[in-house]
Length: 598
Image (tube, rainbow, N blue to C red; front, top):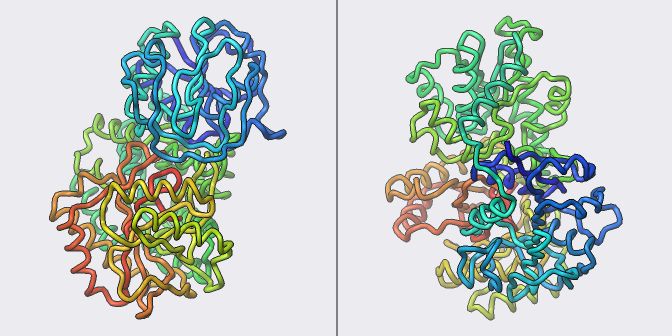
């Protein structure tokens, strides 16, 4: 079977490249960067991934440059593009202007790699460094206003480099580019979804052996598909699902999950209420990483207590999780990956169990779109598979916390430049005194959001958001003021995860869900986080954020504008939520902002 190898330099999208190649009918494997050239000779082509590192660093990932002497086609993406240039006699420079998000490339050569593309195409950028000069024998294939060498190639050597990411959905013709590369490699298209499903089933049986599986079922798409898959492959007598009500669920969530499972014949699911245990453990914790670690740790503790309560022999039972690949890569689960945020199913206690072979994760190599396809093949209904994703830590990562200490530590010239960028586009722009997690250039950021106020023009807001986050490294997120009660001045307060704050967010989240369904926008939004900030306005009410996004696999995302009637409904109904004040709308793509704020 023909195959393509991807060298993993730790980029956020490495596994996504492998996913896309498989979807084009060619088997793909991910290899470490220090793989020997001799091992690479069996592949029809090589792809060099992106990375959180810089090729200008001394301590960059190990790599044998003799790989470039192999007579097989190669494609370098982002970091891989720069590495190809540097190793083959070109140069790489620190970027004066960073590019994160959508860009437009002018294509100089529409044969070979760019066959079938127009003169100008939309692409997705996420980089700081750039190729300064191309290697001998190479030509520039595409450029952007900010990046003169957006693509380069040597057709005789069948070597190509792209500064942008064709593997993400926000490069609309990306699959065409990858398909053209597979054509250059001469690959046969003999890999398909059925073969992939058989591999998952085989691996599952091998890992479980004779043991039974005790699966944590949150009720989201991933855990429900995993639960169904385990029941199908192992049989319900060897599977027990446990739903833990952690007190961080949406309104009526646990009851809805239990009712659905029972209605669909899943009698092997039990529920335990551990809300007091979780909320007690989260008292006085404000750091987002620490919150995730605590939540993950308590999940394991409750699981162990449930095993004892149900009289189950731990030797005969193995823990199951509905972990998918973005959880792993964002938690620095591969050798050179940067930690963006520690997912609750990737805390230290879980990693120890994984190393001991005490956890099975049937979906760990899949993205959300693949999980949904697998669920459909298992007979799960569309309305379940297309529910908006909900994080395992629940509202615990949507209630942002603070110890009330000073948050702003930014030079005044940053605030001045922010105001100037906003003013040039007809908006007022200020910093909010709270931080959120972002991802820029494959690395984690923990930076400040900018609040912009003015006309609700989504196109102008998208452009302004990109200008701000590309131009000011201190800012990784931009929000638009939908409702401002008394001026855009806010105080950071001492606030943690508490029942009162959770109730404010639950009420607001319920209103938002009602609005999406009432105005037929639910299916048009991939995910709809609603966030409560530890900020109060002049009236002493807490601020909240709407974060509707569109995505396919969660590795990239675009903010999703909502209809005026939807927003009017939300703003009107939310007036009745006691303690809720100003409401913002997140107008940032991923990157530079993550989907969730924590």
